[in-house]
Every structure is written in structure tokens, then in C-alpha cells.
Image 1 (tube, helix red, strand yellow):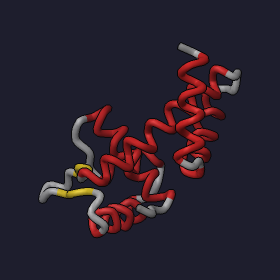
Image 2 (spheres, helix red, strand yellow; image 1 turned 30 degrees about the vertical axis):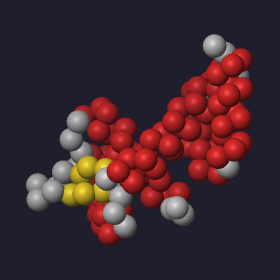
Image 3 (cartoon, one colour; image 1 turned 90 degrees about the vertical axis):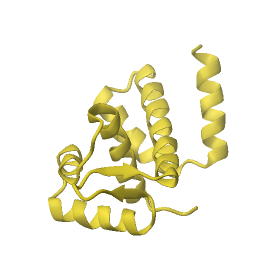
Image 4 (cartoon, one colour; image 1 turned 180 degrees about the vertical axis):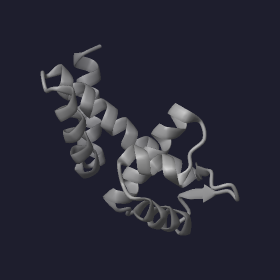
Length: 123
């Protein structure tokens, strides 16, 4: 399944907000990502059209199975990479930014090997 980085970022944001708040609306994503409401509206529309999210009549957003699968994959990558960078001595804010860049471009094989190494080295 091919999906753009920006869509992955939105799906990850929805997952994080669901964990924090329970219910998510477009305005929550706009505030969280510091994006304009029109940008979020367009992204939500595209995510819905592609079957990654559902939006109920009150504007609450939920991830579909495929959306949740992508969001969880990206979130796991982000968390593991960020934690690893912090352990290496990278400042937390920089680690978060770098993890966001790295989480999208690593192959599944490379991420799996990184994960095995990190978990075996720091367990």
C-alpha cells in the first residue's frame, strides 16, 4: 500500500489525539499540528475518500482498520526512533523532529533490524 508522508502524519496525529482525548475533530488536528483549518479540511476529505477515516455527522473522526494499521506503524516507528535518539544524547525536541523525518523513509527490513538491535541492547 503506497501512501504519502503527509497522509501518514495526519493518521498518526489522529491516533495520538485519540489516545490523549478519546474523541477527535478536525479542529483538534489543526491545533495539534498547528495547521490552518482549510488545510485540515482538505486532508480529512482525502483521508475519508481513500478509506482511512470515518467522519460522523457531528464531525468526530475515527480511523478505519486500514487507517489504524498505518497510524500504528508510523507511531511505533516514531516512538522507537525518538527514544533511541534521546538515549544517544540528542535533545528531546530535536529527537522528535528527526524521528518524524526518519519514520517515513526507513524500509520495513531496516526498521525491524533497528528495533531488534535497540530492544536487545537496551533491555
